[in-house]
Image (cartoon, rainbow, N blue to C red; front, side, top):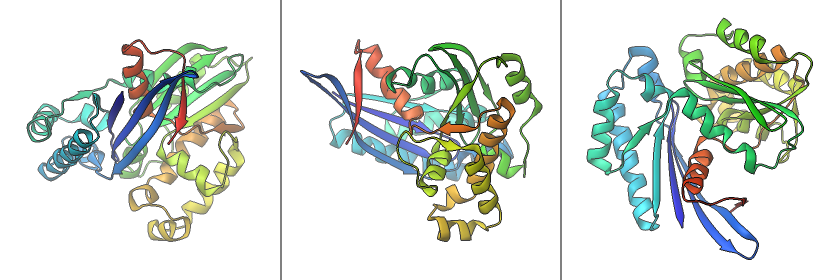
Length: 299
């Protein structure tokens, strides 16, 4: 069985295709394809409250292109989910209608809690030590999802309307008080937590720092990288660090979010396992089909 997950974020739209294999080793999930189109829906929504006609058309044509790939690959299961930008857009129903009309694909808009739950769904399949305590930090263009896990059990989860695109547009440096209040209310000061950081920006930071898979990055390293990037223009970041344009301008706000949260909790190192919403969508489809105890492998 092949599964296609479409993640419509505030900064980009992604298509992730996975193949399910069943053999004597159990059930394996192979990552076949991952493509990303830089449509910054949040640039419209977080400024004007709605998606412009131009970006709505770009989105519809992108999803139409994804639909052609999905048909060519004979994919049986397709799920498309949208997050903060479309969730906040005044004209979201009209946008969804246009996308469905042009592409034939129906989009589900996730609530903040649903988005956090899907991302957290990766936890049980990543084989992290269950005896430890974790703070999941997922930073997107329009929202940040925090999930607290203690000894393998989810204790609390919250979505906040603060993300890289929002912070960039508002020239915002510090996180809102609500984030720190939530941490104060839910973090157990007697416990030591590890941070699990997800999102495209932390993956880019890990690549710049030349970290290996499953290798922790220290808070000091992230703060130093943030200072280096802050001294560069967007164009300099693109050239020096080989960043895409739509990544080069939001990576500093993203690092601001990760480092402020980690510092508030007293976390000195973060792990970036390179999974996100698209992975969570695929896992949800598998679980809805009755699949359990599967392993993830790369293409």
